Length: 153
Image 1 (cartoon, rainbow, N blue to C red):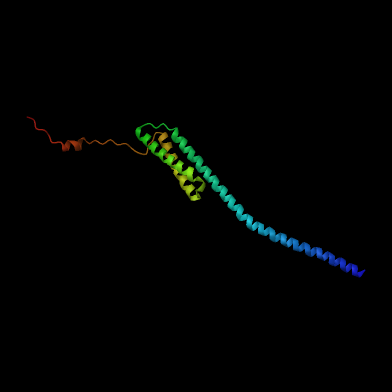
Image 2 (cartoon, rainbow, N blue to C red; image 1 turned 180 degrees about the vertical axis):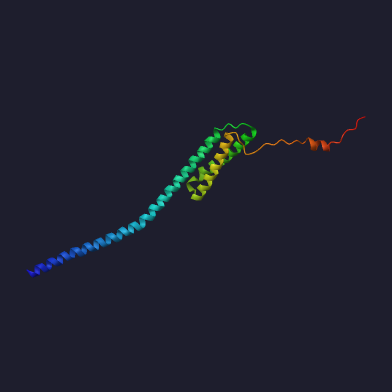
């Protein structure tokens, strides 16, 4: 009977030891999974944030182009400024169409700043202001000084 009790205790001890080894390997495996998955998750979140910034850039760019296309400038100076801004936006549209998937965070920030500046210029033109001031020069003084007086006969 003592022999049976001894085998019984050893049998329980084997289960406990085996369970301890299984739990140890499960913990090590969980730590490895976490060590790999957390950086991958953060990289994926960073990629999603970059994609969100890229989409925000494209939306603000489309808004600037729509503002420029609906603009009715009053005056030659305002019309020329609007055409210049729209020319720049059209060049930027070509660039974005070809390279928007490859833009880095710094490039997106720089382009967003440019689009905001173009939108501001178009908004000023829409409100009737222009960046350039037209000046009228009175050149009669200089022209008259070059013309020699004609003697009367």
